[in-house]
Length: 382
Image (cartoon, rainbow, N blue to C red; front, side, top):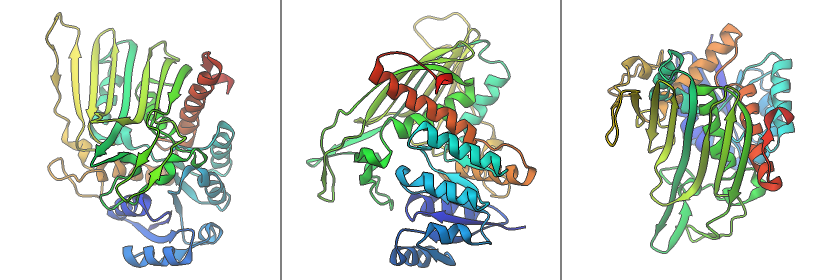
């Protein structure tokens, strides 16, 4: 049977998700929905999508659609997700997952109540290097998990009199995300990136017990190449100290205000070994490198090595790629979509699920509450 997709949004979701969905066998992208008739029809024409909608109610009422891919700004998503689930559609939802913990709980609960598959747009765990990292951890490479340090920092671009986060003005065919400067959008350098990072961290090492955090707005004005000047009221940097349920402790730092930022860096260690994943991109699936070291005595020089990632992690079933020709972003997204389709078919939990997203969102909100109250926040209390 062919699984049919409807996408909300004509920017990243249609341009990138749409491309990945179309690479999978027995999948058809049949609808796109934007806020206006003119933009919906223009997007449908440009990308060869048969149906254009400018009402979410009409989109989710389409009896042919199986999955709704929700790609609007965070402040709009909750209502869209709830309408899609209520209409009996499986949902692929962007991050941040919600505006608050209550919304996150309601989305996860409705998906479970309706026996529907809910997946969130957290592709890091499906990056080939991260998949291999997870396998090594599960096989005992670290021993007992002790600590971790996670960073997700994307660049602040400073040139020709312009100052702006790459995330807000990515270019490369993607329209600017100027709303990232506005706190009512639901996005920020902490909310967006901490959610993505946490969904990788907890996938690798397990759930979070407690958090203490702080956030800041360091860059007071964005001057964009198109002449727009913005005064952001969103946080562009956040840090958290984290205790996991298994006893491991560590740190998470995220933001979009670091010139020449290094991208994603995930270091985990235990009483037998250490693993380090580094990726200068936002999880494009092919750029990440994985370093591994055991406990052999050394001081002042590395004792480990960069690992060769096995070929099969690049070979998404039905997509026809190999390690030699896997295109950026398509591999990790391809794996994620493939797993979602399998979860629907087999009636099992997907990865990453709405329940996992709820847990990650609790961490995000707990760190914000911690900054306001000056105390540790237990996730069990949220």
